Length: 432
Image (tube, rainbow, N blue to C red; front, side, top):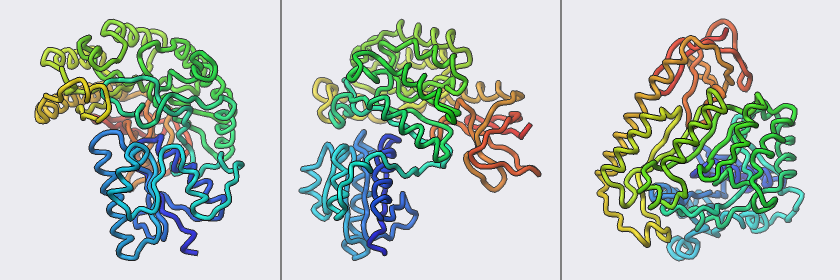
């Protein structure tokens, strides 16, 4: 029986997680016993789903592979397979450098693993999926690849051009997961707003979200990874139309100075960015905008950075992440610019930017104290139940810590919570 056990380790983003869940679903349907990210891997077979986005992620993936190679050399593991972004991009090099791995797969050919394990290929299993998230929410990947070619980004090199999933396939998956108890969907893609252009010759993200919102049992829909250039404003109308479309948008803006937006090949201007955010907040009152910003890209001057800081102060993003530029081979920036900004300067700028955001987050959280909000319960801890509002995505956004009292709360259920306190990134409350 132990030979039927398979440990699946996922590194990187939620898009990778969906691939792991699909693999696990098919393995389970074929009689295997997959376990995801076990605290103590002890199966005879292991699959590592790697990330290759930036330097730190690549290093983590390599170290994880080497840890399992050591386990194999010690006789604790019989077969080791590697899939995902890192092996998609560096498969030949990895084969040469780490021959102890039985086979490397990329982002799109990992289904071959089933046959290599001796299982019969059955196309009817391609829709199978074994959720690793709490059963009340799931990630919904609507496309692969990206047609944007931002100067710093290796994703198009790794994943290739944008490919939308047919709308009927996505809706069928939603209905199937609702039947399994999923209430909340995080819609994800490399570039959300591009959805449909390849299949339907126009942006169809608004139509897709409108259709998903009408599926009985879908309580929350949250949108991730939009792009500011040619943003489909009809998506804002869909947010207003449906109560179950969260007033939340994750839109990566990266920078604000026209100098940097040009060097980054973002195809949008400072003025257009400010105007877009103003439109979003006017059309969807109380929308919570999450963004990601970059510091230290080649050519970023102190003046550019001052503009970026002022942008953060002006907009007061509800949610914001930031990272320092890391040169990625094969990208436009790597071949056309010199990575001349010292690492300590990048880190200093990053720390300064996040300190500004920390104060903003504390201010925005404090303004919520006294309000009653709909909250879904994710888990139970020693002193609190932990939940989220519609403005909070799992893993990356603030949480609501709910004081335990005489009434037990159910994981995956919604409650009206009065917010009674706030910290920089978390809220406190009790059941009304």
